[in-house]
Length: 83
Image (cartoon, rainbow, N blue to C red; front, side):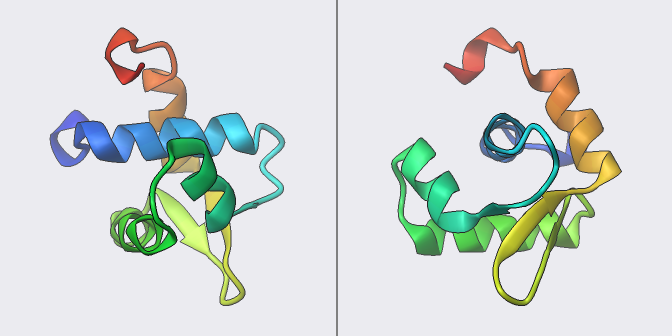
């Protein structure tokens, strides 16, 4: 799993899990606010995560962690270096 995940990708996955613990979906603007980055940056990363099977994104922008994404986020959730 780790070979395809960069520190940045892991940070996004963990943030998605934190913002959406119930798995109901989250908007990219919420991720941008939480990480203090631009919405276009979030969009670009979500596309990469989607291509790798870690997230699903609806046409109208709602983002969901896939089972693969949930496993990765849970695995890295307590990583000290994410702070």
